[in-house]
Amino acid sequence: TQRGLFWRNDDTWQPVDGAPDDYAYVVIEANQQIYAGFEHAGLWSASGPTGPWQRIDLDAAPITDLVTVRYTLPDRPTPVDRLYATTAAEIFVNSGLDTAWLPIPLPALSDEEMDEAGESNSDKLKPRLFVTESGEVVVRNQDRLWRQGDLGWELFGPEKLAGKLFSVVNCCRTGQTIVGSNDAGLWQLTTSGDWTRLDADDFFSTTDATELVQVDDTLYAAGDLGLFYSQDGGRIWHKADGLPATVTDLLINPDNPTSRIAATPAGLYRSRDAGRSWESVSPPWTVWDLALGPQGRLFVGRSNGLVWSDDWSAPTIAWHTAEDMGKVYFLSINPHPVNAETVWTGTWGNNIAVSSDGGQHLAPLHNGLETLSSLDLIWHPTPGQVTLATFEGLYRTDDGGQSWFKLPGPLAQQTVYSLLQTDDGTIWAGATNGLWRSQDYGVTWKQIETLLQAAVIRLDRLNVPPPSPPLNPPFVFQPPEAKVYQPREWLWAGTEGAGLWLSQDNGATWQFAGLPQRTVYSVMFDPLMQRHLIAATDRGIFAVETKQD
Image 1: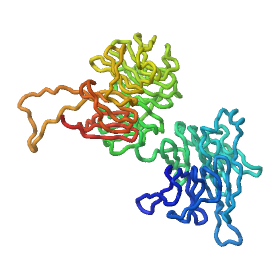
Image 2: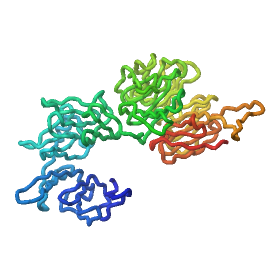
Image 3: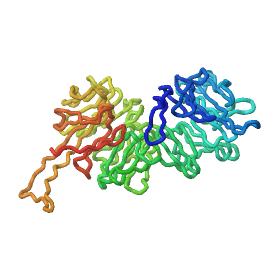
Image 4: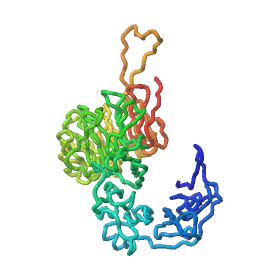
């Protein structure tokens, strides 16, 4: 771990006494010894987890990977492990028979060759070692794979993926070798010696495959979006059970409240039992926003375009991809509140993507916005009026987007993440330095000082469920006269790292509502447990019971 080595022989993990309290990259067993590589402390070994631990006589750090190659000698009754250790510049080899370490230069392109390829060593993964069944060593360096040949190191893998290769498994047999890449899929070495794309439907086009492991007939791929597995040789992949930690948005099906869908950086997950269990229902898309159109169409904003579905309660959800802008990062979705055919979506660097046919086709709006990144917008009651939140302040149109002007004031030079207009006409803006309010349609702004000056990334309303009448079983409550319940509405603000804030009086006052140090993306009342508030955060989904009053 980043805090050193830990070990266990039961359910309890404990730190390894005597080993460095340093970032530990790797630990392996070789020649009846345990070896561990550290960021600053170098290479250490011990006969067992409890030590004693001692530093190996190798003046090299960081040790980013260790592998062994087992071989036999005629005069030795037991096999010997040859040990390989790599740093950022060299590979070191120990025969397993003595304490000597032989340095070997790490295969790499020169700085000039990297510049020519348009790449930089600063954004590459640290060197990694792999061993083939025949005992050859394969090195990952500069996000390329290098294989030992008769004439030295030679590049291995699909040429088009040079600079994107992260991992390899079953190396280096034709028909079985698979390499994993950075957002460019899995590729297999065919019996004819060519490379072919393996993952069906380009499953790994939006996530990396940092690690590949085969256990019996199951392949596992690990990356920045989680753990995936395949049981057909690497064509069809499934996300391992479990909801990812970060949930960027959450929707409850209005027609079936037990059905919920969660947006994550690893794709979409659905629960059919009110959140007790979750299943993956999409490829590992990076999803930041969900929205329902006025007729129930579900829109999904991804890092690679917009998709939608008209039936997300079906056993298998049919996802439809909007044509055009398929390589654009979508940050927010804003269907028109009345016209189901009109959808405006905020994008990274491509202003507003507009659809006039319910999400089937998209085109950038431009008209002065051009390369702006848009994060949220308000459809005002006056037809044609829209206020837009961007990384560079607020913009307004009065003619349906044909022309735009920038709103002056304290928000003009900062990022505005979220917008909300309440029934009294007040406009609320969540910005980098907190929450702001305008009561004159954006001419002047006042900061809400009771909130911490954290980034307010989401704003919305909460319709508070009516209070439940007391029941005394077995009698059913029957009021002697008609009762009128005044609908109540709360406002909520989700912050980046500073929890949830609520207003129960239409914004006159705000109070901290919990989830300290959490980033809050979505908040709603559970329709099946009406006093329970649900929040989607960067550490999962939380629920809390609110008081009756």
